[in-house]
Amino acid sequence: MVIIEALKELLSCEIIDGSSATHALLKEDDPSAKLKRLTLSDLAPGMLVLKIDEGRKVHISQAKRTKLAAVCMSPLFRIDGGKDHNCGCDAVLVRVLDDTTCELFYIELKSEQPEHFEGQFRSTRCFFRYVQALLSEFWSIPLEIRRERFVVFHLDPARGEESPKKRRTLYGELAQNRPEEPDRHVVRDGETVRCTQII
Image (cartoon, rainbow, N blue to C red; front, side):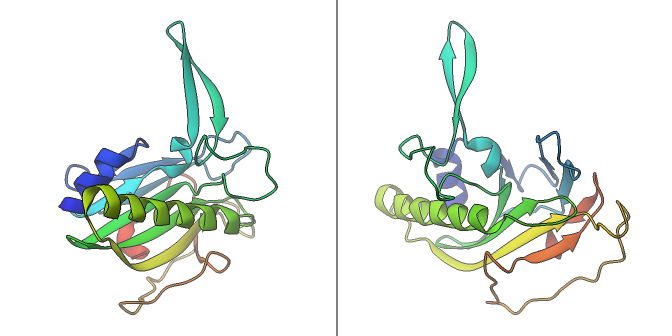
């Protein structure tokens, strides 16, 4: 698919392609995080999982060693600004519908009290507007983002790490939500969640 190949050529973050993998492991490296691992399953051809948060780490090489230089959405941005423009969500699930159309699912892992996610979602959404412009300008792909959803996976503070039974939420074809009002899914650390639960 044209969009998938263009995204793989453009982006340097880790990419899991649903045509060659059915699962994507998402990890939270912050030692204070209680939700450290979540696996998305049932990936299929036409889907990509982009590990945005890890890809924001800019490294420099010095004498055969690498050193973390910055964590940012672009080295062109100031890293001491007072806004969330350098924040990124943990992952984005891209579902390609045809050669010029896709859906985006912005994913964030949080612990027991999910908060401080709006800036991460908004910054990542802005980044994808830039990706959209690059695909148009350099790959001649007039990408249409048909639908966007924002999703937070978190632990249930009342139950520790036990996950209550979940019902799948069904959305209309063009239903969307907002960065400040994401879908919230209670999970256990290390749980496997079908990607069809969020799409």
